[in-house]
Structure formats: structure tokens, C-alpha cells
Image 1: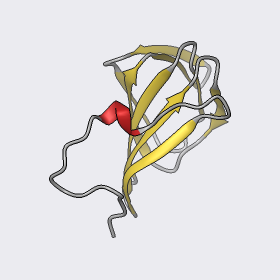
Image 2 (image 1 turned 30 degrees about the vertical axis):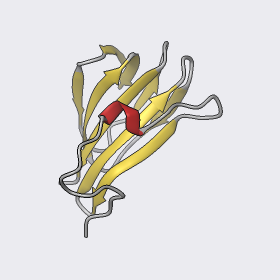
Image 3 (image 1 turned 90 degrees about the vertical axis):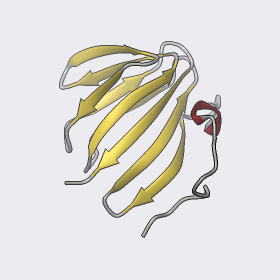
Length: 109
């Protein structure tokens, strides 16, 4: 079953759907199903997500700013307009040297 707060056929500016906050990294779901979904993540400069794994294959797209995405001790510097693919259950962390917004497309195999 599809879960979303959005209506089909409506147009939205993607990066405007999530705002960063000084208290924590903010995450907003655009839609989700039992097989995955799309979420937005907003960071203030200096915020980070510690090493973690996800049970889904993920496409990470930088919408604004830039992030340092670490996968298995390899640091990738991604800027607005760039993306990377990440396999399920792969340890990774994210740090934002500047304000940044990401889109995560998740698919469970």
C-alpha cells in the first residue's frame, strides 16, 4: 500500500519539501511502500549521520549543497546534481560541511 501526504498530479519544488533545523538532521517521506520509497534529508552545516546500514538499495542524489558520504572507509564528496548508488546493508555515514539537501530513492530487492 502506498503511503504519502501528496496527491497524484500535483506539482511541487522538491528541495522546498524539507527544511533543515539546528536541532537534528531532518527527514521527510515523499512516499513509501513495502518495497521502498523516496525520502528527503536536510542537514545544517556540520550535522552528520553516524555509520549505519539500510535494508534497501539506495540512490542518493544531492539537491542542494554538498556532503561527504563515507562507504566502507572511502570518502565520496558529492555536490548538487550528483548521485551515487549504495547497496543494501552496506555501512555508511554522511557529513554535511555546508547546508545540504538529499533525495533518497530506496528499493528493497
